[in-house]
Length: 124
Image (cartoon, rainbow, N blue to C red; front, side, top):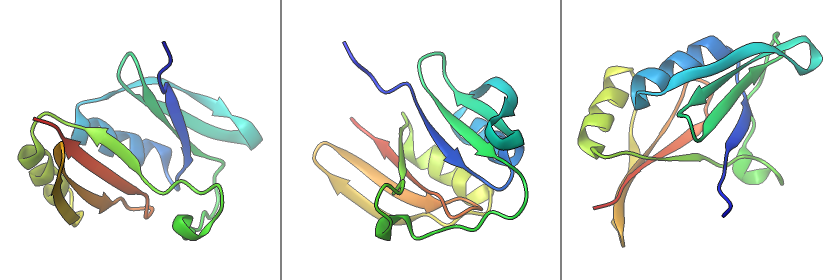
């Protein structure tokens, strides 16, 4: 059996991004430490999978990932209660967009403080 263990993204402030992901999805920090190029990484998620949030410090500029070959377009997270999660997203100051019902689920997207797009989806 194969499954996706993690993705690694560059952010401007890994502690802030980790806190947002923990608060939003009830995840936890699995590991934190020194990383490539003198940077810092936090592994945030569950016992089975996580998002590695990385920064080497200094100014980080967002790019248009949809126009960049090899760019990360969005992170998809499955939740049990879409409405509750959307309320949390709004309470954190983010703006949900691109709502949609499709077979077999429902979803919306939002962009975090670094412009990283996150898709939140729920399946019946």
